[in-house]
Image (cartoon, one colour):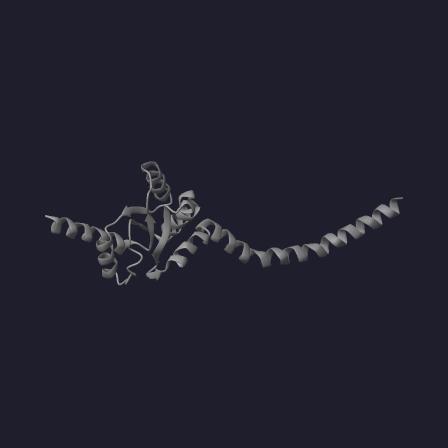
Length: 174
């Protein structure tokens, strides 16, 4: 019976990980049920699916995807958050911003983003990546900045001329 359960669990993980653009591996040690629910809820709000996995099954499912994950990543209680790339970034932000990380109950172990295996430091750095709307605003500012500056320079000549003429009119009226 356990073989059937393991095979079903492995097939489910392979299917889920095959569709994922990003994954975050993080440790969950000593969490209370309230803390666990809060973390899972925050990750769900960021768009990520979260599951506490059997380490051996997770390694097999990731190996099926072509990722040779270090054995140190899967020691102890390890959870995986997966989804699109934004979900993985959101999950990294949840872990990084949580007070539980500071207490040592949560910690980033690694991740996968768009087919690239990330170490712990790189996966934790995902928390510093701005969200999609912020990136779009930054790109729009970069694109529209030169045009805005050109319009201001061209407008400055006419407005300067208008101020000089108005000054002459004001002085002639006195």
